[in-house]
Length: 118
Image 1 (tube, rainbow, N blue to C red):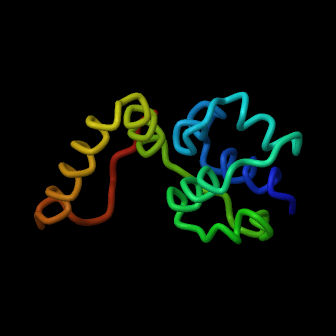
Image 2 (image 1 turned 90 degrees about the horizontal axis):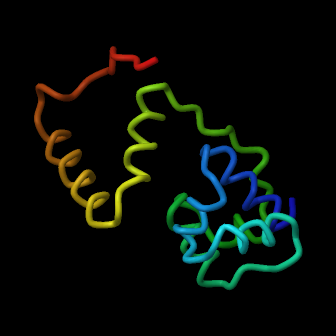
């Protein structure tokens, strides 16, 4: 796969808009569009940010074939949480993460989820 195809695959398989991916990479949605179409190549710093966010190596994005990876499948509850999380600024996102870490340390909140949101 090409670099642009890998970027588009990552974005779409994680249910993200070009604007959302642009925020992660420190770029505009228009820049992401040009990367995905192959019109332009992102700077290495943007690739590094994308790789870090998705837990990948830069080389996976640059010359790997990400299409072999299974797309992310999120429950309705996870999609709702993720949508709310993405609307927050960086400070709000950090607070959500800290709170989630705190809850994950309490036994009464651990275990298999049984809630689904429609």
